[in-house]
Length: 467
Image 1 (cartoon, rainbow, N blue to C red):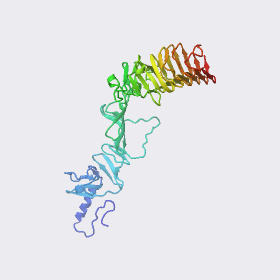
Image 2: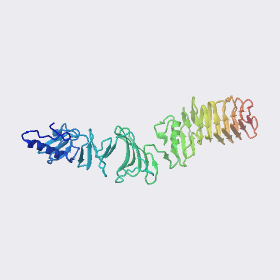
Image 3: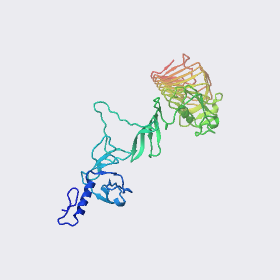
C-alpha cells in the first residue's frame, strides 16, 4: 500500500530517493483537502486567471483542462490543476453562495441549513432563480395550533406576484397580481399566447370577464331590421340598409342586450319569411319584445313556415307584442310555460296544421281590441291547454272564404281557459263552434252557444264548461 486509505496521500517508501517530492505531493493534497473551501461550483471550465491554491468544484459539462472531471475538486497548485475525487461524506464550503455542501456519493447537496440559506433543493436542484426547488408528489403547509397563511410579496405594483401552472415546463394558467394590484386569472394554450379570463378590481371588488363577450346595456330604444330579400344575417341589423335576413337572428340579437327600460323592436320589411322565430327566454330587464310588420297591411309581411311553428314563445317571463303580420305554419302563435303574447293592431292568419293561436302551461295570449283576418283553415283557431289562457275580446275578426276548423273554432282542455266577448265577427266558418273537454273552460260572458263562428254546435265532454 503506497497511499493512505481516505485522502489517498502518498507514503514515502523505504530507501526512496527524492523523498521530498512525495512529501510535498502529500502536503499539497492536504492543503487542498483539509478545510475545503471552494470559490465556485457552477463553472464548467477553468477561470482565466486563478489564484494559486484556488479550489473549485467542477460543474457538469466540463471542458478544457477540466474535461472529464465533473464534480471533482480542482485545485490550482504550483501553476497547474490537480484534481481530487470526492468520497462520500466530504464537505466543502461554497464561498460565492455561503453554503456548506456534502458529497452523497452522487452529487453535492446542502450539508446543513443556514439562516438565511441562499438556496435549497429538496429532491431537486435549486438555482439562482428557483432558489427553493422541491420535487415530490405533494407539498404540505399546515398550521401550528392556529391558522396558516402563505405570502407572496412583490416589490412594487408594476411587478408580478403570481402562481404559475405549467405542463412540461410550459405555462398554461396563472393567477395573482400580474403587473398591477388587481387580481388576474389567465390561461394559455401554449405558454406564449395568454388569455385573461377574470380580473377582480382591487378598489371596488368588481369582477370583469375580458375574454367573454359583454352584454350590451342600452342607453336608448333599439330597433333591429329584417328583410327576407335584401338582408343578411352577417349584418348588424341596425338599419334598413344593413338588415338581417331572418327573424331568428333579430330575436337572438334582441335577447342578448339589456334594454335597461328602453323599448326593443324587431321591424319586419314587406316580404315572405320562410322561417319564423323562437323566443325562449325573457328580456334581461323583463320588458316586452316588439315584433312589428306592416301595421296597415299585415298581408304584406307573411311568415309562412312549413313543418315548424311560426312564432313560438316558451320562456317563463317572456313577453312579446306582435302586430302587422300574416302567419301560417304548424302553429301560428304559440305561447307556453308562462310566456305572454299580445296581438295588437291588425294581424292575419293563413292555414296552420294544428292551430292559429295556442296557449298552454300557464301561458297567456291577449287580443284586446285588435283586428284579425282569417284567410286559412286549421283544426282550431283558439286552443288553450294545461292552464293556458287566451283573452280574445272587444275586437273584430274578418273570415275570408269558409275555412274549416274541424276540431272546434275555440278549444279548451285540461284547465285551459278561453275568455272572449264583444268581438265583431264577419264571415263564416265550417266545423264545431267550440269544444271544451277535460275540465277546460270557455267563457263568452253569457253570449250564448252561437257566439263563435262555425256550422255545427259546440261540444262539451269530461268536465268541460261553456258559460
